[in-house]
Amino acid sequence: MIITSMLSGLIALAAFLIAVQILTRLTTASPVMVYFLTALFIHLGAMAGGAWIYPGLSYWHGATIYWFGFMAYLFAFGAFYKSISLLILQQIYSAQGHRMSLDRVATDIVLPCFTNRIDVMLDGGLVRQEDDKYTLTEQGKKTAGKIAKLQKLFGIDQCGLYDH
Amino acid sequence: MIDFIPSGPIAAALAASFLIPVTLIVSQWTSWRPQLGRRYRLALAVAWMGWAILFTIVGSFDPWDYLAGGLIMLTATMISFNIWGLLAWGFMLSMLMAAHRQQKPLSRDQWIAAQSGGTYHLFSRNRLTILTNMNLVREEEGMVGITPGMGRMMARIGLLASAWYGIRRIP
Image (tube, chains in turn blue, cyan):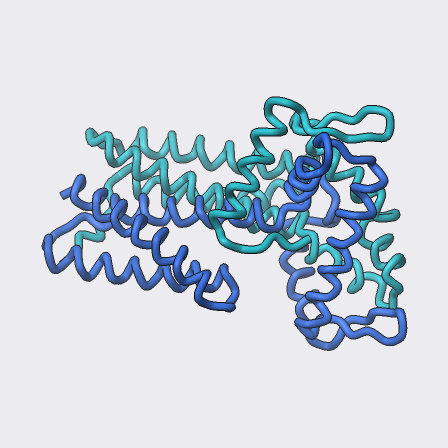
C-alpha cells in the first residue's frame, strides 16, 4: 500500500504539472492562485480516487511526494519570476558579449523594478499618486500595519537589502 | 477509506517542522543575535536535528517512512524560506514598509532612498554582490559580465524556466 500511495502521489503530481501548463495559458488570473486551486482540486480528486480503487491506502506517503513537488514548482516559480538578482543575471546574459556596464544594470534593470512595483501598488489600491508624490491609502496603511506586526513577532527590524 | 495515521518518522517530521518558526521567533531574544540569513539557517539546523532526534526515539524499519519524513522537512524548508524571504527581503513589501515608516508623501527618489538607504544604484550594488558571491557574475572596470561556467548555466536555466512557466518576465 505504501508503494501504491507513492505512485498515486507521482501520478497526481504529473496531472498537476500538465493541468497548470494548460490553465495558466488559458486564464488571466494570478498564476499563484491558479497553482493553489489546481493543486488542491487534484489532491482531493487523487484522494477520492485512491480511496475508491485501493481501500486502506496510506495517505502520507503519496501526499508528501505530491506536496513536495508542488512546493518545489512554486519555489522555482518565485525564484525565476520575481527575483531581481536572477532578472539581472538574465538581462546581462542577453546583452551583447554577456556584459553590461554597472550603470546600465542600475538604470535599465533595477530602476524599472522600482517603478513597476509602484505601478502594481497603485493598481492594487495600496498607494495613491498626487502630482509627483506617493502616499499610502487607508488600505495600504492597514496592510503595512499587519506586516509590521508579523515582522515584530519574528524580530525583523530591517528589510529589503540582503546581509552578505 | 484512507489510512491517515502517520508512521513515527512522518509524525516526527510534522512535529519538527514547527521548530522552524519557533526557533526564528526565539532567536531574536538571544544575546548573540545573528543576521537574518544566519537566523534562518540556525532555525533549519535546529528543526532538522530535532527531526533526527525524534525519529531515533520513535523509530521505524521502513525506509519509505524516512523518505516521506524527509520530504515533509524539505517542504517545510521551502515554505519557511518563502515566508522568511518575503518578510526579510521582499522587494515590494520592503517598499510598502518604507512608505509606512516615513508617514508622509514621498517622491519616487525619496521612496527609493527610504527603502534602500540610498539610490537605486545602492540597491543594484546589493543584488550584484549576491551574484558575485555566488560566482555567477564578475566585475571588471565598471563592467559586469556573466561567468563562463556557473553564470551561463544559471542564466540559461532561468530562460528555460521562464519559457516553461509560460509567463512573461516582468521587470
